Image (tube, rainbow over all chains, first blue to last red; front, side, top):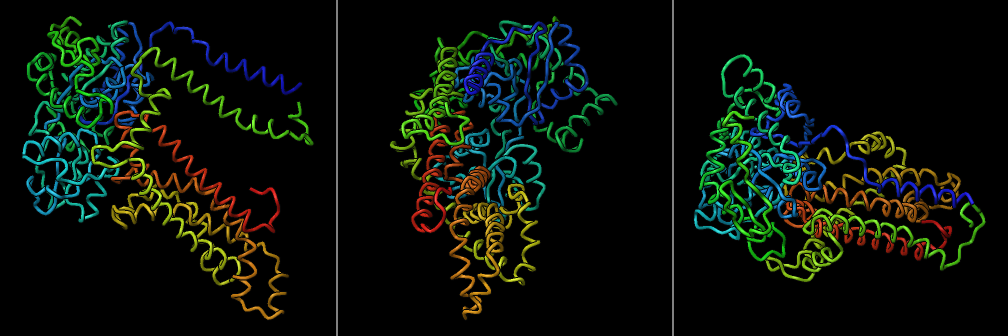
Length: 353
Length: 271
């Protein structure tokens, strides 16, 4: 009989575990971020209380969660967080390809040298042929390499790719002189190029505006409660305004971001130089509404499709749509999964937040 | 019900039924979650439906990919070689343990080092291994070997140590050489237990294999899992994980069968 009792308890447990939770009164949103120079302002926004100030203004709570990059996007796709920082490429091949309608709320910056191909022994671009190349496959590094090869009349079949974890790629490359070519991003680029005899042969500055760093919000959440978008946008540009000034407060902010990113203030400033930040709402607005962003996104879309990142079964890059502020849509108009939304940035530019 | 009856004897049907019970429950729970997530979002990739996983598995196992390869088999073979070679190195672990358990000088030389070495988390040493052994196969095999070597050595050591001293004395008085005692009397007695320990360490070996392949590789089961994770292809990852589990399970069953057949004299029911 004891067994039956236990069984009943187990059953109750299962039923309870599956019953829907009652909706919470105070809306709390979770926002995931990971370490990258262009995203460190989020950390400072949380640390300095600027984010809380803006959240309070719109009557919500925002909780920042620091994670590793890929796990953070996975958490976003699984619905564990409401918003997450990511590049335009991951936004296409992870949430959008998984059917999560996502809005690029803020285009924060584009990589302008933070991603690079580095070589030993003075190997130049033509010399890449037949070489072994360490990189994180299917990442922005892979995209950069692919663009570099195409622009120089080479094919991916001409090189051998070794998938290498971003956590170990710099020490492994530096300690093995048999490794001739590596593609990676900052801060690893900085660590690698400091060693003697290493050349940067191609960087994201050669393909400006293609690798975008975004704050991405779940479209459903954003439409249900625009307060989240307003608070995030307001806080973001307040922090950027602070960083782009000069003075002791700015230095303190930069120092905080540097130490949080695990580098010195000088190194952090150097990384900022290779990051094309949109310092003002107007700059972000201009880029987001430009023709340029659409042509650049087209490259990324095709790359994702070519590599099978939109799903192995998809037969074209148009399997879902990407929409732009002017109402233009690339791909399937009935299945828009990624939206560049300039309305919040516009409010910030007009000072109406 | 006899769940709390020490002397219960469930019949063969009952035994099988109960054995399958939890598999079935897990399956039902999975399908329920997958269905509910797909109702909300038909393109969900985090919890793929069975149909999607079957498609995913079929395409990696029986269709050529862009490089004209059957991925699953290429990956399996590459990983199998790595684990297989590492497993061969474990012969040395057994021999070392045996010698440590029997010959006091060996014990003095190795025991403290091995006890300490056993506690070192091998995964944390990965970058050093890559520096020492390069990025090729050597470093991956080295990680798997280093990961389980001390455990096997220490287990063999303890078992050799537990052999009754009378047996050794008797052997010596009957004129056996020291080597004969070690290899003809002690080793055959402890071998089935040592093989059992190796069997139980399969899981650790697979973990080390996947960790090594995740760091730097261009082929292998762990490589593929971490690669397709970049676009959330759980419809490939889950079949790969099931495949790895199945292979490990079969290897385990094979070794268990071998032990039972080869060492019939051992007590029934172990393992």
